[in-house]
Length: 110
Length: 113
Image (cartoon, rainbow over all chains, first blue to last red; front, side):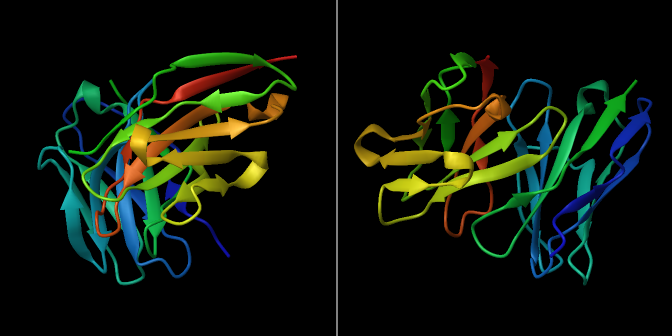
């Protein structure tokens, strides 16, 4: 059974650019959640997708958007990058209440 | 609104000593509670979870946690810590149909030889 995978592992962007992060969910899981973890903080919920529909959103601006595909993999897109977007972005997949996390993508915005 | 407080930012214990990491939560209904562990530069690994039933739950790596509704707590314990347990530990709360997890700020565990 393959766990949650994310790509890329690391990314460097400049302010104002756009970025796309990818997540492959664990086999059989139909729900994907995205979290942002700033340095020294706990993860903050960005949004969740269930069967290709957004199923809830945290306190993040509209420049954070997402997508889920028929195979339940997912993308997180961030437009107009700001310095404060530098963080570890975590994807988690689930079939019920328990979320299983991927290794994360570390984004640095210069 | 749901929230989690982990009062201890950093704890240092000696190898072989016992460990207790504190977690207090606020949630309007019956909570689903989780403990995750994160090694440097890594994602989160699930240690254990509580949904209902026996309030003492066992997890991986010899960890256990006890749910105390009257104290709104879900403390993590281990009787004898190993050097490989050094990591950051996060407590999280969610709900059955509630789609998100709310995490505490984490407790960094250092293990001295």
